[in-house]
Every structure is written in C-alpha cells, then in structure tokens.
Length: 282
Image (cartoon, rainbow, N blue to C red; front, side, top):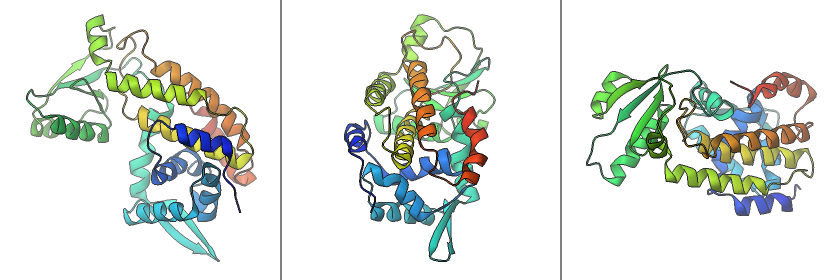
C-alpha cells in the first residue's frame, strides 16, 4: 500500500487553489504521460498521486469523468486498464503547452486587443472572460487580449459586441501597464509564489517527485492559462509572472530528475527530448 508523503500533505494543505483530482490527472497527462508515449495503466496514475494523499477511489472517479466527457479512452490489457487521451482530449489539452512552458511575453509579436462593451454585470464579464480564455486569449481589467497570430473569428467578435484593434509590441506607457496589471491576477501570482517557496527541494522518492511535479505544474498551469502573452514592457516592472516562472523552471528541473524511474527506461528515453525543452521555449 502506498502511503502519503508528509511533505506533500503540507503542500496540499497550503495549495492556493482547491485541489481537484481530475485537474491533477489532466496535468499529469499533458506534463508526463504524453511525452512518455501517451498510455498509462490506471495503477500508475494512482501510484503517482498517492504521495499527495489522493485516494484510489478519487482517481477512479476522475478517470470516469474524463472518459464520460470523451477526453480519455481505456483498453484492457490482461487485468490492467490502460488510459490514453482521445483525439478530442489531445486537441483540448496539448495546444496549451506553449502557454504553460513557454515565455510569459509574446516576444516580437503583435497582439489583438478588444474593448468590452460598458454596462456588463459582474456575471456577464466573468462569462465573457471564460469564453476568451477558452479561445486562447485572456481578460485583464475589461480588455480581451489575444496574440495576433491566433485571433478570434470576426463573427465571434461581432456576436459579443467586441471592438478589436491590433497593437504593435512597443513598450506600453505606465498608465496602460498599470491598467493591465489586474489585481486578481497579481494576487494569484503572489499566492502561488509563496506556496512554491515552501515546496520540498528533495522529494522522498520517484513517486513523491512525480506527485510534486504534477502538483506544482497543476497550480502553475491553472494560473498561466489565465495570463496573456503580452509584448515585453506591457506590464509594470514589478509584475511577478516572469520571476515566478524562473522559480518554477528551477523546481521543475529538480523534480523531473528526481522522478526518474517512475516510467520504464524506454518511456523515459522517449520523453527526454521533450522535457529538456520545457521552460526553455523562447
């Protein structure tokens, strides 16, 4: 029986967002399973999350939910259940990789800004923000933002009464940088940074290292996907995103090395080239 790791229990207790088992599984697929060949027995997912105190029943429930949503499929091999992402699951999760592991700015690229109509209620603004984020953009202080090479369709903009304009990546004036520095986003970054500072540097074993890796990237992923890739100089000088990314990258290198042995040697060899480029994209 795999026992929880006390170090990870402390990390779970301090996690700045509500821990969701299905979200941890999604993170594990994108971060660890796909590079290692894309298929994994249910028992290995359970083994990875056990040090964090995630019960086998919670893992099974999460896998059933993802399967019912059409995001994973399962096949039987002897007495084992093997899971992999469906094409729909891969299409939903994998394109986000560049935003999770890539730079925090849209280096050298234009962006599309869309001003939201006045008079929206708080609920309407939040609903619109969810749609913007789902389409690869972000919403800060009532401004919807996309990279110019991946803008929304004109019909979608018209349907939501948004007025778009393309901006060049020149440094933004202080008033604009401060306006885009959404207080809720800053609070998210600050809480995540404080939490990561308390994560253990030396995991107990490969299983605990994998659990730490998944837990950290889950917290980072959920924040990073809310953050737009604006050009250099569009945020205040003290904006914490890039600084926190460097800390996550350093911990990630440690946890990847410490999790060696979780997968088979063949799987780890297949994943090595992908993992080497994580947080080095520019």
